[in-house]
Image 1 (tube, rainbow, N blue to C red):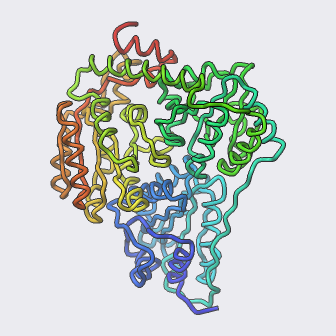
Image 2: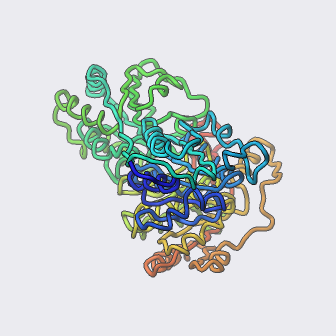
Amino acid sequence: MALKKASEAVVEALAAEGVEYVFGLPGGHSVTIFYDELSKQDEIKAILARHETAGAFAALGYAQLTGKAGVCQGTAGPGFSHMLVGIHEAMYSRIPLVVIAPNAPIAHYGKGELQELPQIESVVGFAKWWYRVDRPDKIPWVMQQAFKHALAPPCGPVFVDIPIDIGDMEAEMDDYVPAPRSSCVAEPQAIAEAAKALATAKNPVMICGRGVHQSGAYEEVRKLAELLAMPVVYTNHGKTSIPENHPLAGGGVGCNRTCVSEALLDEADCWFWVGSQIEEFAVGKGWPQLPPERTFINLNIDPTQFGRNWTPDICLLGDAKLTLAQLVEACDEDAGERDFANSEAASKIAELRKQWRAQVDALVASSKGPVHFSQFLTELNRLMPDDAVVVVGEGANRVWTATELQLTTPGTWVSASDFGCMGYAVGASIGAAVARPGKNIFCITGDGSFQMQMQEIVVAMQYELPITYVVFNNNALGWIKWSQKLGRDERYYCTEFTANWNHAEAAQAAGLAGLYVDSAEKCASAVESALQANADGRPALIEVLVPWDEQTPGFHAQHTGCSTAEAYDTLTGGGS
């Protein structure tokens, strides 16, 4: 036991949990309960955001790449309120997030203190756990509970509310004990059933979601795929579950689908979903009914996901990495010798990839410009380092980015959930950069999404982070405007930016290297200049002018219910 201030105990707990960074910005209340103690040590660094929402997004980006809980802080009242979107995003994406905020003094709460707010009531139903500290000696218990709940599967957000007068109080406290970690592996009987179903299936396909990243199951995904010569496709959140140049990598599904993944899924007699919530943008509108002859195996660490949309034939309740490792062993007994590189599946994928490239070439050839998404992304793919991290933003640009960037290093893709937080990538890229020090970070977003958090680029400048922001500018809320074209007889209302930023010049004003791309010929030099700026300790921004209505066949198919072939015909004028 030792006499400590409550604020000292908070910082001690964070250090014991291995916290490296806290994202956010202080208010007067925050100094008392947190920041003054942070200033007395060097183990934990505070990253000064320019808006509390961006601080929460940065903590989530950090958590996605490290597997640790992200920690963010905002002051009482409005500061806390700005973090609510981050709390909601963490709940939807199942990412561990510890949110700390002060509140009005407990001695006068309810009397109209400055920035007083019923903060606990604001998170009920949107966080896994919450607590308002009522005594200083409870801080170690509260912080341990917070990390325990945030990291217990399925992960999610927690909230610690610390009244300002509690922060300065002293009490006798025990040394902090870090929260225990927990996980589980599927039952042996279920693993045996799944192994038999996969080994005897003629055309099995594995569909990977965010759970592969959260458990770090990359090696197990590859081993199982190769053992069974089984194609691997992935949701938007599961991209880079397997290197995308692997012979069995079949690309994205749902909104990100191409003729490659669509054919693989259509012809499969066994679907093996791993670590996915199987949301609308992963499968299509209305969750199309599964054919009765197709076996559906679902591996998830959250039992509430089983039967949420489709009822599995076989449920595997467990951590993806642990369970897949057991499944590899079980399948090894029945799979026999399979030459995955020369398998029928690999040959089919190779042919379908050629078909997809031909489709993209035709779409680029018919583009109105100034620059087609694929033209820029092709050059970016060629020039960026293999270990660079891509943080993708919301908007129609997300689909082209997901389908065209072929990332070969697992775990180098950061995305928001299908909750759809505009502006997420701008803040998340800050967290990604400190999570992967020295690695190039590419934040790829659209102008509509970028404008919601663009103030955060100066944070990258302050901390000399090697981030390149790619802003695809179509002077519109492109996804919404496209839906007005498709379903509202081209009544374009309140979706066009008739006044817009020159984003490259705005970046230059903040000290970044600002680059402007208005023709395909400028793509390569812009990427090269950005990489050089990053090497010199300076973030960069590339503004790329793109058309607003040139979407992928998968995007069009997702919204209309047609096949990608029919969507391609429509987009190239070959169909209605």
